[in-house]
Amino acid sequence: MTSALLMHCSSHCQLAFAGSTPRHEVRRAPIRTALRAAACEQAGEQAFDWRKAAAATALSASLCLSGPAWADLNKYEAAAGGEFNIGTAQQYGEADIKGKDFHDQDLRRSNFTAADCRDCNFKNTKLQGTYFIKTVVARANFENADLSDVLMDRAVLNDSNLTNANLSRAILTRSDLGGAKISGTDFSNALVDKTQQIALCRYAEGTNSVTGVDTRKSLGCGSRRRFKEASPSSPEGPQVDEREKDAFRKTMPIYRQ
View (tube, rainbow, N blue to C red):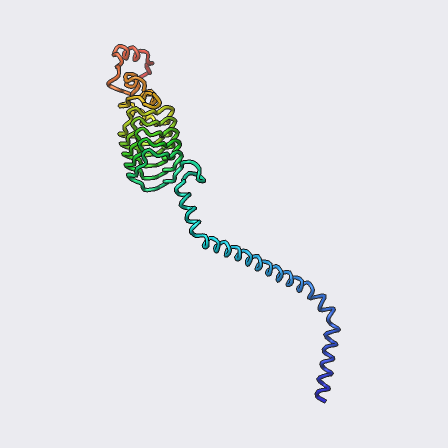
């Protein structure tokens, strides 16, 4: 009797569930659809991540297996220098290279920005278009160097040797050239601060052996007499006669006292 009762209840429950299925299916259909969509999206993301991981692993393995060839390529690039292995540009930005010897080298378009180049030797070096922004080149030797078109603003050139160097079209704004040797230096069309120009014109001399340009003329110094006359309150220049001063004072208006 017990088994018969259980069978009756089971069949009754199955009938009840079957009878209520359409109503529950209508209510649960949107939820099931959303769950299926979320599951598919998550599975797709996981598959995409796996593909990226597999690609990264393959790339790492290829780089590890080709170690010697990769190292040789890096050595070649370092030796070739330049931009994309083309040209002569070298990178020494912010480098500490005090006393380094660069004489007779081709360093056109190189970068020495903010580098410490004190006592460096650039004799007979090609440096056209080189960057010397904020560079310390105190006591450096630039004798016979080609420094045309260099960007050398805010640089420290104290006691540097610029003998017979070509500084045409160089940018030297806010740079300190105190004590620099400029015999035969060509400053044609260079940008030099007025204070630096006046200081350099006091002892500028010579003619550049390569360009044939007079150093004083390239600096815009003019004659020594004209320079002295241009200097404000210079006791070495011609003084105004006292009679001319009195005549000028008489032309001034007299205000009511």
